[in-house]
Length: 370
Image (cartoon, rainbow, N blue to C red):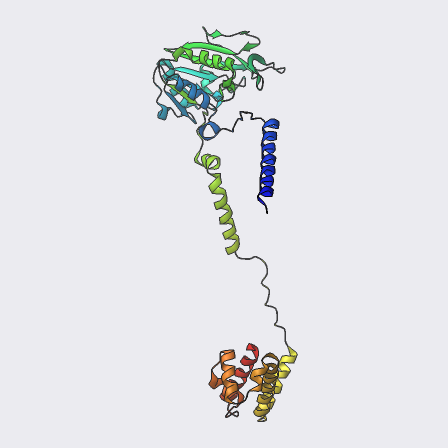
């Protein structure tokens, strides 16, 4: 190919590549997009994870707990404990310990009970009760978030029979959304709904402002103790919640092993009767009859004839040989000892059972290997 032609082809290819790059840059533009990834790690199971990080960024010491364990948390006067779950799950022993800690100077933030009755020992100590309304209305706070809408409080309102309780907006008939009162040297803050403290709602400015107003009485005086489940689960529940990925395959493997090793139920059935082969029995009987009549030479000749026919079909060159040359060729071809082949082709002492059996078995083995 001439140099001019090569140059023209190279220039054409360069123009096509340049046009493709130019078209790509013209029709496609780089666009940045923020994609919200699903929460991982502690954020996947702790709804107060965002509140924890916000308080830590403020320089506060924060401790989170999956369930209410006062022995492990060791709350001190000046600490603030946020009880994220409903007070109905708090036991009498936990309520007594919380009351003693609040009276010593602690700050408890808790939601109100959801029913007018059976609010739990902690709600009963504060004389809290829910005001149930068949036509429940929601109270909304503008959040400024297009994807979340307005910050809403839709759980039942509440009231308390204690004196000197500071309430938020509301009245005795409709109930209140917020209340705060002193308990000994401590403070108790009650709100009808604490869902605005979860990880997603804290993106809203009203939710953050409301959270700091709740935590304000002891905000910079002690630790922040965040409890997102008041009930202490049993060992079996913990295994089902966090260990099912291991327990389920082990249970399936155990069930499969038991099924494999278990005794089969049902009536014992006799073994099926083996099928009789009448033709084989006739052949065996005919051979035994011929042997008893001293016809071993005839039986050997019949088997030898079958071998020679197959040898002529499979290896005519060996079939054309004779004597020791054929014996050596068959030994190399079939991998059988030459002495056995010689005894099978030219047997000695066929009237003896051992010699007859060896000769016949060798002939059959040779025929099968061809």
